Amino acid sequence: MATDTVAVIKEDELLEKLITARAQILREVRKVIFAQDEVVDQVLISLFVGGHSLVTGVPGLAKTLLIRTVANVLDLSFKRIQFTPDLMPSDITGTDVIEEDRTTGRREFEFIRGPLFANIILADEINRTPPKTQAALLEAMQEGNVTVQGETYQLPRPFFVLATQNPIEMEGTYPLPEAQLDRFMFNINIGYLSEEDEVAVVSATTSVQDISFERSVTGADILSFQRLVRRVPVADSVTRYAVRLVSASRPVSSSAPEFIRRWVNWGGSLRASQFLILGGKARAVMNGRYNVSVEDVRALAYPILRHRILLNFHAESEKVKADDVVRKLIEAVPEPSSGL
Image 1 (spheres, rainbow, N blue to C red):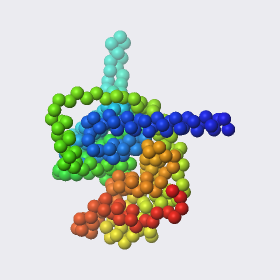
Image 2: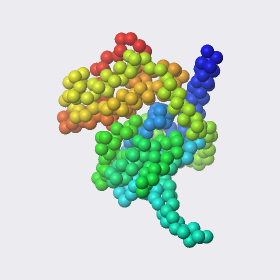
Image 3: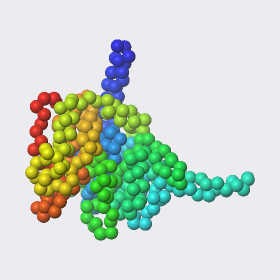
């Protein structure tokens, strides 16, 4: 019993530390980024889960600035990779070069690490690089290592990829296939600000700025937060609700509503169900709770499902968006009668 009590005390302390870390990160990010608390929370949820995120928005909405600011606030190594049509896999993973020992004259291959060897990677405009280079990044995301010339090199932990893409100017781009989009936990949409918020941004960014960040969250903290999140209990009814929500998004499912069969070619995968529960756990502890609610699942359904629902011609002709489908799904799938 004494051991169990100590474990509970340590978990409570870790929970308080996570809540404090979230508040501190939000406070620091607000020095630069205005009115984007929900977006920052989604970035933190994926970080505390150990997932990766895709950030989508038209040019000029501070996607890159947001990611760079979050990285600056955390005491983690950070690298930005600008994806271009001529970028090769070795440009991001690293490559072997011949080095000569000046004392012996002997030549040997030495591996020179690429920019992927950092805790936080900003993959800027990922849809502007060829599939071969995209695949190298996605393999690193999935495996946590890279393989060069038959040798495997472990990436640092935590390892977190934030990729950006613009929904316009699609000419000359290489859209990610659905199977590769599924590797991203979230597709985070950044929209236009309200008039008041835009006035605040313009006023702040057109005057002298001298901003310094307080860094208090380390890589070890992030790894401990990830372990804490996975220990959060979930009621069977909430897990079943998440699974039913994802299952209803698949046209082949017997539980799929009529609008899914009409508008959707392909629905959410098993990863979607897993991320709904993992994300729900992170959202719960970030709000000081040790239990996951149906509301946690519903709140994360949009960023988790919007890039996993493949719309067909009927949806496009009727100007239906993925978020419209998710909203109707939430309305159509009944909340469990028991549980939280």
